[in-house]
Image (tube, rainbow, N blue to C red):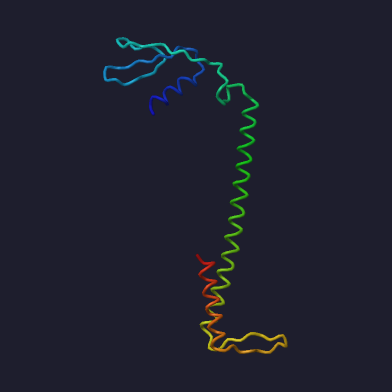
Length: 145
């Protein structure tokens, strides 16, 4: 890893000094801008005007613009996905709160009723109450994860 970093840094420098590679007595490979006395160093030939890579200095403007456009598109789609997820989470939390509230009201009251179209209270039977309690409990389990 260290060797790669050194090589990259040396290659990125704007100076046109030679780059040398040598192996020390312990077998470690080194790179530098001048040969070290006592070690057998070889000068590396590096083609500076190579347009195969995408860098700011490569001169390949069309590819850079294409990649920048793709990066922006990815950022936008990621932001949209985050926004949709936040909206879905908010909606889920709202349903969770509603089911919790209904469940609490239902189990704390002795008698439960619903309003008829005429505006009169219609009290639920024990079976209807149990069914509603089960429905609210399922809603809590579904939306409050």
